[in-house]
Image (tube, rainbow, N blue to C red; front, top):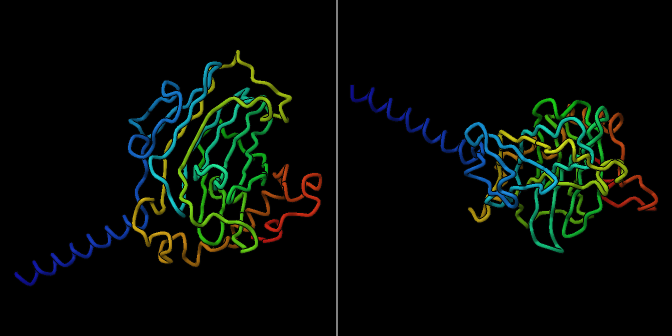
Length: 289
């Protein structure tokens, strides 16, 4: 009996240690109350589903925004978002990471540009590294992102940054060693819903129709997996973090096919091919995937 109890105890110790290991590697699902704070217009952000989801509101008086309470260095950040439906021209729903370091900031942007009813939603991505940005790409989404929730993710390790829509990579920025790359500044997670009808829809030609206000966007299933700062000093350099392992150092063959499909069928603007801005393509444009 004593031997049996000892074996059972060892099994529980093993299960507990594995559980702790999984927690340290995979983190936990984030919740709005625990992990985020309102940055502006608190009365325009409403918690729903017991704090597991939120509603952002834009009206003629104000937009709104929220940010993570912590900063992160490498990892993956995901949110499920349902965008503003109907005539959303002139509105921008943004989900991004930002180091908040002024002129030397690092920033990774998703910006969802509103549309007139019936037109495709456009997502603009941008990468700032050590204060240098102006790396815009635009993709027309191949589904209605206002009809249901879809997962938008920013993946960031020492090798590359990947922007995902559901499981489809739409943007890759390689750490080629030839251009600045965010490696040392932790970034917070931010989101905003705001008016930008001077540029957002058809270069500002389509203005907000305030008779359609208020405008709503919805967020849920927040997921942050990364090294918190402040936190263990060796986390960001640990090659055992799942996001640094060999399977995540480049796109898989399946992901590469999806990426090429997006670029061929849905990309509508790429700064890399805009010769009016860049007569010679910037060096990161030739780094491949």
